[in-house]
Length: 300
Ligand SMILES: CC(C)(COP(=O)(O)OP(=O)(O)OC[C@H]1O[C@@H](n2cnc3c(N)ncnc32)[C@H](O)[C@@H]1OP(=O)(O)O)[C@@H](O)C(=O)NCCC(=O)NCCS
Image 1 (cartoon, protein in one colour):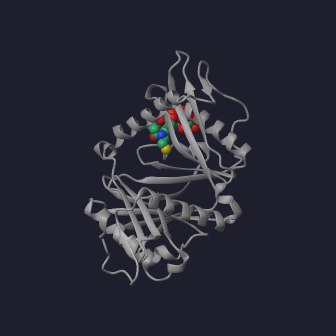
Image 2: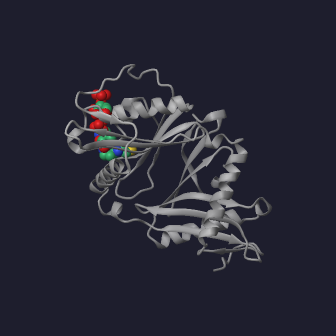
Image 3: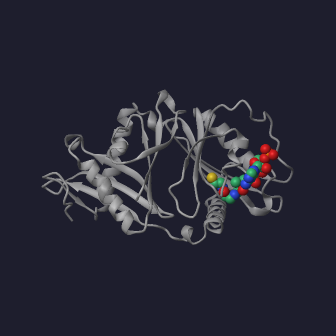
């Protein structure tokens, strides 16, 4: 497919090969690496923890990763009947301690309005932005805090009978991921059953070689931009804008009402206002004073 409004020479295809998708991801990764002198991958911290009850059941768990010195909580779940007993606090506390040891200087999370926007502030996380592009009154909250957190309890204040598993098996974590998914479905209903689609665009030169691309996915009637990269030779010529516009057009045909994006200060933050994105928050806990803007665009 060729995009009508494109400057000459390059074409956008909405059917990239697996190799082209991998190439686009690798190019953006290399760009981020080069712009931050490798710190984007520091400390490369990832961990999974699970909680076992006295009767031997997995009743909670957490999965975290890190980027540019900040630990991100990806999944946190405690089984319904064990909530409000301090189990999630304990899981987060241990994950933060491990992250600190690895060299993290901050911790952050994205949480839906039906999940933990009131839970995280109790653990010292501060609200830095609310994404309100979803329908049905759903919002998504971004919270962060600096590490080490001096307010944390200094000792292990676990309730009797629960055991923290520092090296859970895949089976243990399956219970956690399934429990987490079910809790989302229970709160957001059918929208969470809908897996959404991948929006994948590749920019090609006259020889069919990939020189740019955009990767995104849709969920709860919004599109989340994940990767956007144009080869340095072709920047400033309208190709990035053409990729974004084409992705937005596809998202709208799938019923999306808004877009969500993020942009680090070492990336092309001047680009997004040009294509109609507004900032709804900014994170400033990253290494080397790098910041990250959180972006929204609503379709009219
Ligand atoms: C959010 C969740 C992990 C909290 O687990 P939990 O074990 O009940 O949390 P804790 O008992 O450790 O709570 C710690 C503090 O937060 C408070 N808290 C917990 N959940 C809360 C909620 N939904 N609203 C307000 N406060 C809450 C507790 O009362 C406690 O307060 P205090 O110690 O300051 O008095 C759990 O409700 C859950 O698994 N929900 C479904 C999945 C989910 O939403 N995960 C978060 C995704 S980002």
